[in-house]
Each structure stands twice: as C-alpha cells, then as structure tokens.
Length: 182
Image (tube, rainbow, N blue to C red; front, top):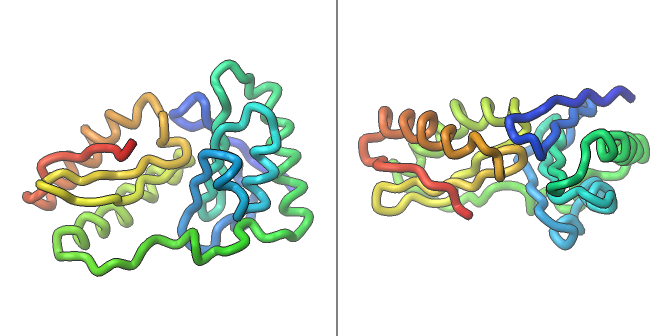
C-alpha cells in the first residue's frame, strides 16, 4: 500500500491519501480521543502522542498535530497507523449512519445556501484536506463549521470572508455575512 501525503494551507495539518475509499458518504471530524471511539482508524491515530485532530473525508484522512510537535517525527507513525488499519480490513466507522448529516426540512434560502456550499465550496476545501459544513442561517448570517485542515487554519478567515461570503452574497441577496461556529 502506498499512501501519498499533501501539505495543507494549515501548517499543523497534513493530508494523507491511502488510495482507497475512506468514507462511503459524508465526513467525520474528531477533535479528541473520546469522540474517536466510533472510529477504529481515528482511535489508532489518537494513540500517537502529538495527534490532536483527525478528519475523515471520502478518499483522504487529515491529521492535525499539537503545537511544538514535528511532522518529521509524527508522519512515519501516522503513515504506519493508516497502513495497518487498511491492511487489517477493519471498518473506518463503526456506525456510519452517525456520520451522515442531518436531514431537517430546509426553507428555500437554506436549501440554496447548502446547494452552493455542496457544489462550489466543499469540493474545493476537500482538496486541501478539510470541510466546511452548514450550521445555521439567522438574521442574514450564515454560520459554518470549519473541519479538518480548515479548522484553525490561518487562511480560513480569508476563505470565509473573501471567498464564501462574497459568493453567497452574490447568489443569495438575503445573506449579509458568514461566520465560523467556534
């Protein structure tokens, strides 16, 4: 098995491409060992000292390291854990239904926002090892969850304001701004 790695705009996060499907549908974001209990892969990665976040996408895994840790030390350990997991045949997620997004009924504006995010934003940020997920729309403000490499990325504020906000305001006049959910 050959696993490719790619740098992301977030220097604390690396993207690992195992060459096979990671998530059948949706994504999963783990920010601590407790949350990783439903993913044998995330659990194995959190067992490595210095790993602070794991994000699972369709065909990639992004891993975030703690400040002060070195990718030179962590990268071989992460590669080994990913390789061992996929060689074992264990599932990535024990309950994949829990990783899918909510299916609440949306009004027309929210449906338009989600459509633009799904077709124009999420594929682009997935290339950088992250995801941006809709949270809510209140009083003209769109609230978004930054996940994977996008979470804590120095350029994520610029991406939100200059890219996503401008696009949403252009297509949906009711949108006045975009803010991250912290």
